[in-house]
Length: 249
Length: 326
Image (cartoon, rainbow over the protein chains, first blue to last red):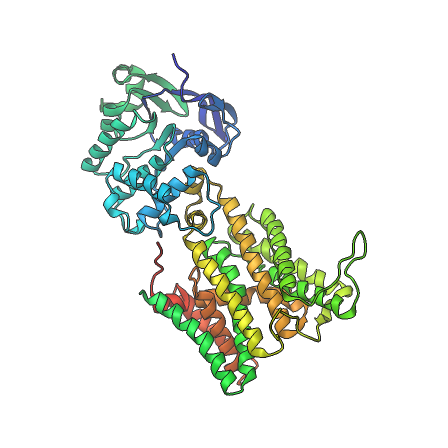
C-alpha cells in the first residue's frame, strides 16, 4: 500500500495527571476522508494541535508526506501543504472576505515581503482567492466585511481559506459546528468532492456527516484510539457503542 | 471620494496654507510651530505602522526618536569641532550634510529596532509594553551618563545642517523639506497598508493563529514592521534635533514615547493621516493653552479621554467613520 499522506506514531501528551493523547497512531491515506470522533474531552483538539504544530507532543512523532515534521513550526507545516480549519473561525474580522482569502493565497505564494504592490491587484493572488471563494459558493460576498457574515458563511470562508493553500492534506476541526441542517448538508456535499483533491482528516461531532463522508473512522476516548475501521465496522463495534455512540447508531 | 480622503486632503492643504500664510504675514514662529507638528507627525507615522498596523504597543519609540536625534548631534558636533568620530581602524569624520545624517539615523534606528524587536517580540501584551519601556529607560540613562556627548545637558549645534540647494536656516525652506519627507513617508505608508505585506501584518495583529496556518510567521512580519517603524521615527528624530539645533536625553525619555503614542491615539490608530491630525492638535493645544497655564497638559488629558471614550478611531475616525480599505 502507498505511504500515508499524514501519519502520527505513538503521539502522547499529558497535562499534569490528564493523559490527553495516549500513544495515538493514525494514518491519513491519499484520497480518503478519515474521521476522528469521540466524546467531549476525548482529546480531539489536543490531537489536532499536535498534528498542526501548535502543541509539542511529549512523545511520538508526526509524519507528513513521508517526512518527520514533529519539530517543525505550524507555519513550516502549512508551507509543506498541511491546511487546517479552526473549530471557532479564526478569520480577520475587520477585513473583507476577499482579503481573508487573499491572505491564504499570499501564504501559499510564500512571498509576503512585498511592500509597494497592491495585494488586491495581484492577478495570481486574486485568481487563487476567487477560485476558492467560488468553490465554496461565497464569491458574491467577497466585498463584505467578515464580521458581517453569518455564522454559516464564516464556516464556508474558513474552508475557502484552507482551499487557497491548495494543500496536500486538510485537517478540519468540526467544520459543521453550528451549521444548520441545510448548511451541514451542503458542506457535506462539498467535502465529499474535495477528497479527490486532497485527503481530509475530519474531526466532527455531526454523526450524519461523518457516516455519510468517512472512508474510515477512528474513535478517540480519553486520549486513546479505541477503534479504527470503516463506517460499518465502527457502527458494529461493541466497544464503540458502549463508549460513545450509545443508542444513536 | 470618501470622507477620509477629503479629510486627508484638508489636512494636507492646512499644512501648505498655514505656513504659506505665516510666510506672507511674516510670522516665522508659526512656521516653526508647523515644522514641529510635521516632525511629530512623522515620528507618529512611524509608530502607527507598529501600533496601528502591527498591533505592537511600543512604549519605547523614544529610543528611535532619540537615536535619530543623537545621530544628528554626534555627527554635527564632530563636524563642528573638526574632530573625527573615530580614527582607528579608519577615519570617520563628522558631517553637516542632512542626507548623510538622515541615512545614519535611519540605519542606526532600524538596527536598534531589529535588536529590540528580536528580544521583545518573544512577549506580547503588557509584557511587550514593559520590555519596550525598559529598553527606552536603558537608552535614556545611558545617554545621561555618557559625558562625551553632553550627558544630561545634551548637545548644542550652532548652525543647522545643510541640504544641497537649500538654505535650511530659512524657516520656510526647512519646513518644506520636512513636509516633503512627511509626504514621501505617508505615500509609502499608504502603499504599505494595501501591499501583500500590509495584508499579512494586519492579519497577524487580528488572528496570528490564522497567519501561521497559512504558512507565514507573524513574529517575522511584526519584526519587519517594527524595523520600518523605528526607521521612520529615527528619521523624525534627526529632523527634530535639527529643528531645535539641540539634542538631549529628553528625546529618549519615556514621556517622549508617551507623547508620540498620544499623537497616534488622538489622531486615529491605523489611520493614514491619524498621526498628522494628532500631532497637529497637540502642537496647537501646546501653543494656545501653554500660554494660559503651565499645566496645559490637563486639557490634553481631557481631549485624550474624550477621544478614547467616545471615538475609537481617534479624530480621523470621528470625522471619517470606520476604516475602509481594499
